[in-house]
Amino acid sequence: MPATLLQTENLNLAFGAIVVADNINFELREGERLAVIGQNGAGKTTFINICTGLIKPRSGVVRFRGEEVTALPPRSIARKGMVRSFQLPQLFLEHTLRDCVRIAAAGKTGRLGIWSALETSVPSKTVDHVLELVGLRDRGDEPCKALPEGHRKLLDIAMAMVLEPTLLILDEPTSGVSTEEKHSLMSTIMAALDAQKITTIFVEHDVDVVARYATRVAAWISGRIAADGPPQQVLADPEIRTNVLGE
Image (cartoon, rainbow, N blue to C red; front, side, top):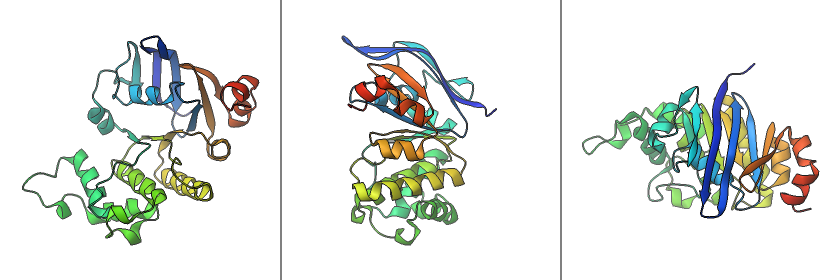
């Protein structure tokens, strides 16, 4: 059986009267593709923020690869191998694609400083490799601001992948992307993650994307996981169809 990668025990958090994490007990194993679904405000992003150190829970524990990380800052958690991308790509728009990847990589290695040349901070073959994985190597010398939204998403993921994560968490990777581009975007992302043997959690609203690319689905309602299992099972659940999918 694959090893447990991420585990939470009795996570609780509320913002005033709004409960966003209601005693969450959760486990993710290596190699899974977990889709997290739910209406806005259900607690999906808050859960990710807790796991990656952006928010501290009122109570409970987060473990990554068996080590408690609940109290660690985001940078320390990322260096341990749990990395995330955001709904809005976090790019350096005036820089080239290659430089963006170099800056991301240097943040982990610590090789970039006031007296260090950006071009020598990370091996070029490392930069080219991650850009190749997401299909952007040929655009490596272009400024980021020239990229369409779908390619910005891919660059954001390349910047995360250069950190060599074991787990990559994607917050709505297809948001802002046209319907026609969603499946090609997700196919590229998943192929890149598979090539690097990276486990993934992705928050997603498009049911077709969830059904096609997830191996497991966790559906959130009011700060709790209301259903967790194979996509066909969860997406057919009457409670999920009514309260999450809005049918």
